[in-house]
Length: 304
Image (cartoon, rainbow, N blue to C red; front, side, top):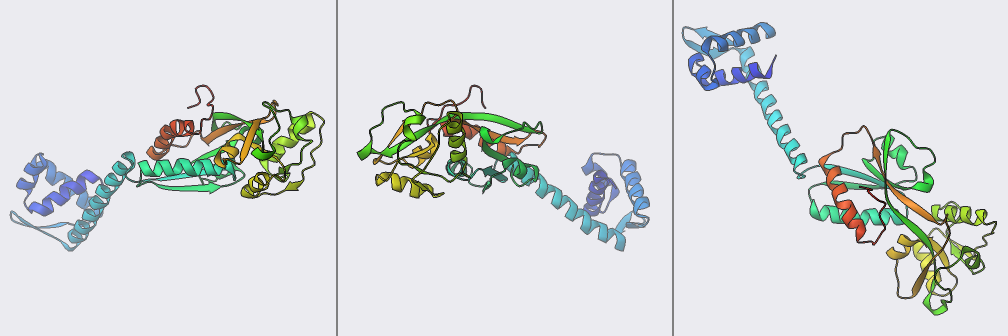
């Protein structure tokens, strides 16, 4: 059963006369009669009572008439919805990001995106393993850091967005460090740090280990606000990624860039190579570079 045959059938139901139906369809009457006969043979039952030149629907024809109307209504609705996707009047975008400052940046980007495309449904999932979220079709696009990428997987596209350095943050009242600072000097100061499981801390630990230095923090916490509150009160300094400091900037704090080859990280945008990307996905990419520029981040060459 072909859609063309159903289209002929519905027109004949509307006109109830072969000649007029054929004229409206812009086909010859014998062609219409032949196609209706093929349709009747396929369903193995007559669809019309033929009494002279008059025709009326059989019971089977009435059933097919109702179902054919439903089919064409569904096709019309589907076409409209697909046009809405293309015009960004409808759609879903699922984004994944590592917990912490990256989630904060992504959430801010999403706000900008939703202001521009209010009809797109957007979700942001925070997770430690972006690749697994992508593989399990939980997200369409993810953001992660290069130190977490141990083995390149060919099924993913990984686009470098920007590289950021780490900084030593202290209260302005106790600021005594000069730019730039050295890791060896900072580790002698009282420090308020993330626990060892946190990505920032793992990068810091690796840098210290490479210089054969030990880290003995005064206080450890996973709470970002608590870390900056302790530093503001002059209880110690902290070592964090520059974007994290920028997101929690305060007139009571001062940040010093740390000169160390291991104390930097690259942010990656990741998605599956073979997955057909939606118009919403492409629109988000178009928004990404100018939006991140507002954070004054340094983009990798030809990243997007």
